[in-house]
Length: 340
Ligand SMILES: [Zn+2]
Image 1 (cartoon, helix red, strand yellow):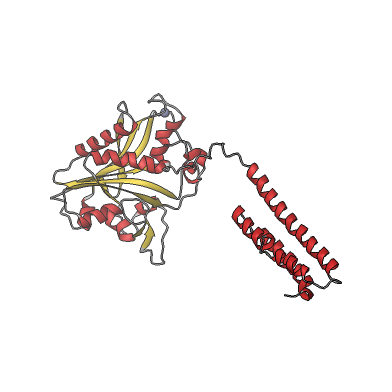
Image 2: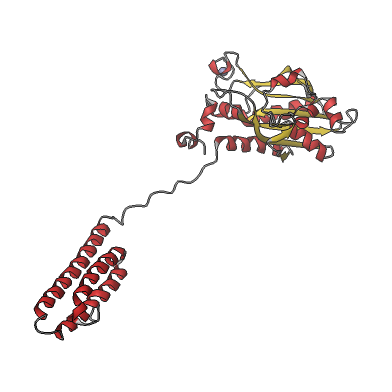
């Protein structure tokens, strides 16, 4: 470079120095910048030595420009290092850190685990099945052929025109899957999501969860059913809980029963939760219908079985005094943090 292009060079340095100082994020990058522009062999130093060799008539003007550049570069550096100091001052490093928020298990998961654990203690295995089921597993094998009036008990989401695929309306189709897979004797529980065409309100949800139980063997009787369910209710709701069996109807069990427990709120005295009856219905059960055994190829004269189904949302609501099923779906952390 000779002195003729020095003025152009000065303008170029100004522009580049400005861009680069803005990109210098930390102290070491600022130092690199300083060496490049203001160092002993930096771009300013090159101009200064050029000045000494320039013709006398140009020297005053060039000297002034070089001096201005020097002031300009020093001002840039000063400004940036001052800004950085201010931002470092603004942080108080002695303050305690923000606590990390850890995830929690959903109250329905916690309730499910409590329920399953009681059955596992009684020797039950745990099974699951798919949300999408065939009409055969969900209805027909459970003694509800097409046009059976009991199908109206479940408003079903069908997934195809033929009506052969659906979102399961209960966990009972897992019973069919288990019976096809296992050889008696066995006892299993199945947990899962179920779907019905209900509108969402305080006590109904189109998506809900069930725990299903099935025990099959030789000479399984209603006494086994009573013993298992009384033990379960008292383990879950407390030893003082009274358990009542009332005759009921389900297509896949015979005889069938509805199970009520003494109200967990008023202890049987009568309150709004139990509609002043002192009792709360919590599950349906019965002895496996011979027709169901035939559908899966079991001989009903050789085997008998018991089955039961419990709503997990309702159980969780009774355990924790929750009055609206929609709380489970809202993902409100204030609600979810109540259950640990
Ligand atoms: Zn009550």
